[in-house]
Image (tube, rainbow, N blue to C red; front, side, top):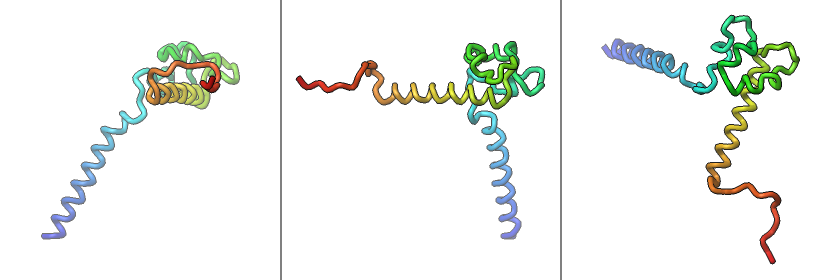
Length: 114
């Protein structure tokens, strides 16, 4: 009887974890403004053309910069480099606003002594 109960709870726990992971999987790392490489690659050729990049306006603006080899399309690596740079800039700006939301950027770091 104990073995049956133990097995039942073990199977139930494993099922609960599997279902929870399946629901959570699609939410991790998703950004409403960035559909992701596979979603942008409409023709599934492994590259993002300028036309396909238009689904992400920020990427479309920086397409030429992101296209490091100048072949007119973004490889997965070029895409990831561009999006990582964008994410780092966004994170930096959020941190700066969180530290001091009212701070005005000033030129120089001089002293206030007279």
